[in-house]
Length: 196
Image 1 (cartoon, rainbow, N blue to C red):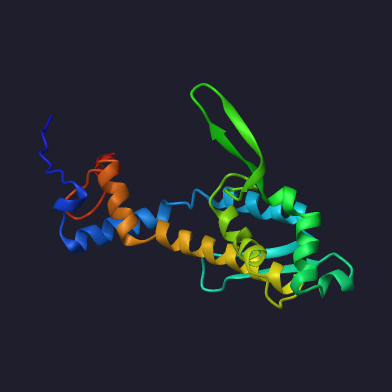
Image 2 (image 1 turned 120 degrees about the horizontal axis):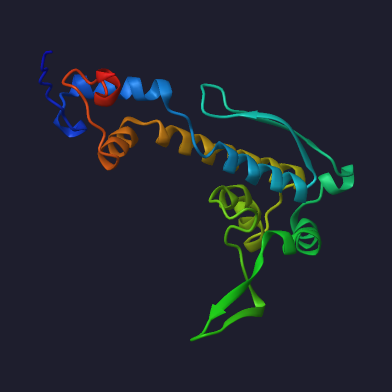
């Protein structure tokens, strides 16, 4: 029988080189946990608006979204006040909800005040994908319905890409390792994996 003594370090106690090694090992096994939530938002948008998503990709060097507008050509080219009225008449109930007020022991829905908070799935990418439409409802501009929907999908793609990059950043790894109290050997190998 023999006894081995090993020094164990927290992430902030490691050298910069060992931290980088630990980060590279973490990248090999880490998975982006919010992809399904992002896709749910996109699919809900697809159910409501006249778009058919063919394919998309984010989180790499080439981000794209390909879609088909499924409504008639005259609807596709609506713009300005006509588009504003079309959105209010056909989509407003889907992208808004009645504001809720809370009293001492009661909950009451307003009959005239609407809220635009996370109207699709409750996830933050709802705000990203519907943001261009909300801006248009507040201040209409001369843009076609097709271009407005393209703006929405591009905004969703940008939000997903930023979140993806943020999750896999070195700073995010350091926070994750600190909060979860991961332990490492001096060279940056994870303690419980290295011993086994």
